[in-house]
Length: 84
Image (cartoon, rainbow, N blue to C red; front, side, top):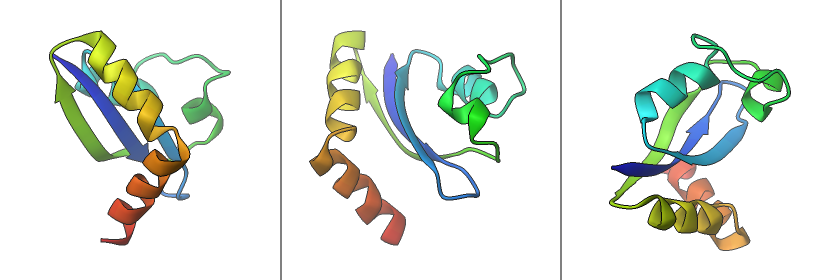
């Protein structure tokens, strides 16, 4: 299984990505596991929480959805989720 996901921190920053292990990836975003110091979530500290996630059978599908979520329409979709 692969996931496309959106996370949000307590400073209202949003990050969109894809992974095969969502639990482990969230631990990296939150600094529990080692993360690159140049990464967006490292530079934007805070408690990151899952805002939205979708499952896919292939990485290719997850990457396509990630790309969409990073587009203007995808970001509008994410903003709508926040308001609800």
